[in-house]
Image 1 (tube, rainbow, N blue to C red):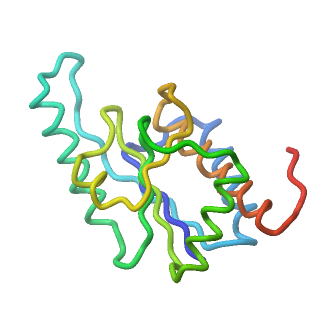
Image 2: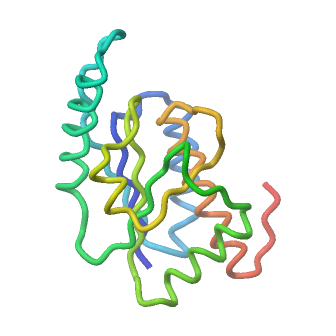
Image 3: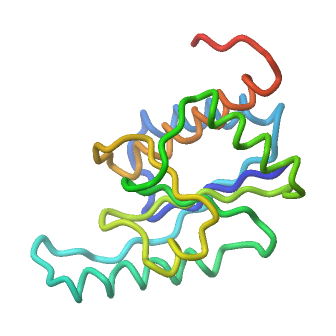
Length: 159
């Protein structure tokens, strides 16, 4: 099983890098994890709606260039479907048993994902109705993927 996380922006915070590295190491027992970062666009505080779309589309094109054909694409969006950890594990298991050996998660920049990416996504996933920094979201996502594999394998997880 291959899992790819494509995110906008470079992760700078050491504590987030450390957490992601730890869960990546733990995940190596269950899957081949790839973390891909694409450059974010400069985003002034005040933008028109049209400028916001231009920035999301530019970042979206960078993500599109990294997608592998045949991957099951899951976009992280505030308005997406929410799952419990057990439901997330069940969803990952169903994806793998339905013929997909590669899942790609998409994390947009501060403005979110382009409509093009949302439209090609097979699942829109939300971790909360609250907004999180996209760098923190990467850590939360990797931890939940790890938790999902532990649940799938009926292994305890309480850390």
